Image (cartoon, rainbow, N blue to C red; front, side, top):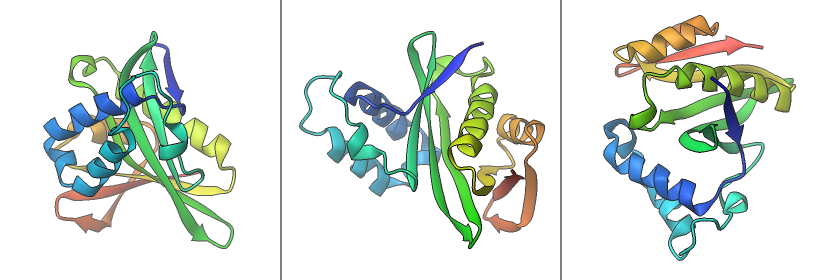
Length: 166
């Protein structure tokens, strides 16, 4: 499967993200984030309008739109923060594949692309982290297969932190 991660964002992609966001229980707790996305596209009537500058805040905050054969199939969010004097820590804050595209290996391939792109874009990144629930067995398997290690000491509720060093 040939996926592409795009950093240019159009209103139609944000509309699709919001539609997905309000249906996904795990994402609903981030109401302020949803409001920020809504505010970004509230007055836009045409889906082809580019909203990249309103959403991307490199290097701190980045959206990646996941495309397969020119079809928008999901999105990834990443956030960078200082790790120490010598480098950054990058958090994959969410990866979402729309329902109709699940079970096709998109998440694992998108994660691999994202990891490569993040380490290429941020050569001073010390590690990448991603949080998931242990009951999300496909995500746990993907992270493990991609070299992430579980950090039990950071357990928050039923969410565990996984990290991968550069």
